[in-house]
Length: 119
Image 1 (tube, rainbow, N blue to C red):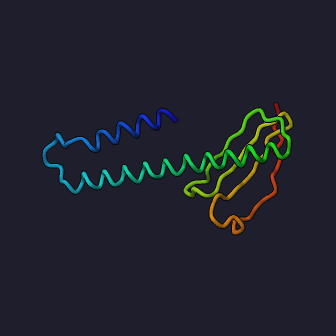
Image 2 (image 1 turned 90 degrees about the horizontal axis):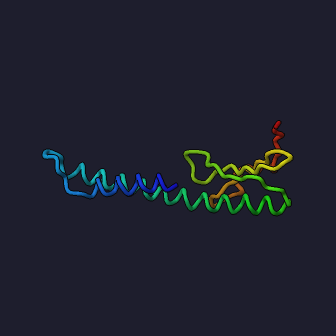
Image 3 (image 1 turned 45 degrees about the vertical axis):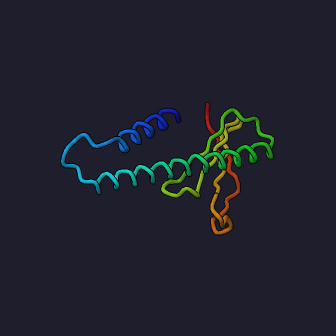
């Protein structure tokens, strides 16, 4: 996560610095700035959605009283609304598909499933 933040800060600094190369149009600089701002907004929205999805995974695992070894939440691109929660336990991997959108009823809610893993 820190590496992404460092890269974004470096790109922002390069984008907003004065142009040292002659011949670059002013409109191109504004387009680059707009693209960078959109990318920053997307990263911020994704970070917030990841936080919400992990909170739902934690609630899921605590409601089932699972012995959690590891947990995670992965987005289904390109949507910020559809996420897949995974919980690793000694019995196997639990999967929770979730919709973070405004109308969660429209998404097919599946019952949490258990995938057996062999160790």
